[in-house]
Length: 404
Image (cartoon, rainbow, N blue to C red; front, top):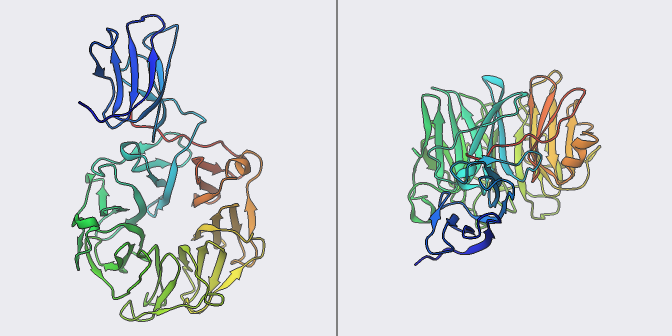
């Protein structure tokens, strides 16, 4: 009477009547040769493999979608992560708290109840999951707003959720003008990027339904930018008063000089399509910005009207993240398919970061970077978890805990 699929069976070598079944709806056990069954895990767990300890019938390992390997020592009553040194988590975004430079927040993709949002402080090896209320949604973007109070915003596949220490359960409080609900849900579109240049300025959301602006992160108004290729993926504001907006679709860049009331397409290297992953405005020069694209790192010095590729020390490959970091002097971090790069001279030259274990672990590419303190850099690998570069040493990936 079930539509579940059974992926694997395991026989207890010490008790032949006991059999385990790993299914798409959890782990099951029969104590009587299959006459009756009961479930040992949540029905949302997808079990791909089972390994029983022949010396201890109460201990076994299970291999899951989304959570890697889990271990039980009490016959399935409780579970803990068994992934030390084995990290395969997809990190979508990483940000630091402007009020606490040692505090990091990251978001994960494809992990359902094991994913969502995690936080840690610098140099800590344990992470706290902050996912209550997210309902297993993928989190595509993160933004911290500090006025009128501190809140963490998460752009998801169903709009924007918000979290605060005073209300430590995520709530979808977004109201989207113009019927921007995702697939008729009414809860909001897919929010791929969230941006606010300064605490007193407006918030912007690049979504599957277009570009939206908000003064509080709850009431969103659609701006008149029409795109025909799946919505928008990145947004940023420039200019002395934030009057210039840049918004990127999957193949085009658009610019507005009047806070989003009118738009024009920005020509790109012979009018070729361009996929922009991230736009970073210069914190001190209003007309300057960088763009991380599928074909390299680009720079604009005229408010986004024209762009030139930065190639000194950089490979001609995909870049996924670029940001200015408030160090002395001002630095630029760039992350992409071939590794992590850093400039300490305003972008004239970039140098690759990392060697040895760090370089090997990040060989699959980097999706995001963050400076903590004054000299430590955290890099999010595309598939190998997080790496921390210290001034004189390197560490292996930090493990993100599964929900036990």
